Length: 146
Image 1 (cartoon, helix red, strand yellow):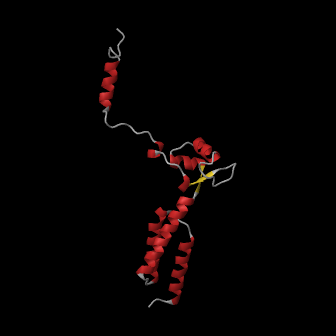
Image 2 (cartoon, rainbow, N blue to C red):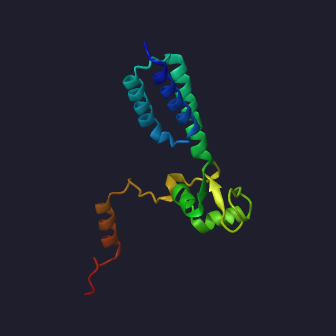
């Protein structure tokens, strides 16, 4: 039988966990820590209640993660757009400003996304050795000035 104190401690931990917005990637460790605390305190939990709580925590974490207002440099690194380009989109009201006029911010969920995060893609269809050979042949005399 579980003592009343152990149940109250576990209940307070659950409430604290629900009130704190977390990054979704931090949730698995938080849940493992919670399971360890339940085991240590000898708390028995109904699985349906526990899984519903975990689902609610995950939804809340994703929601707060997506709604976080990012500074322009953070938004630029996540979106693939330049800081100036994002500032222009905010000025033109194509993206809502989640900050002030002098210090604009963009919510993560409002970010435009460039394919591949704006990173150049190297064509894999042409071999680099073949490219070098073509460039030498196309110079006419192999790069020598005879």
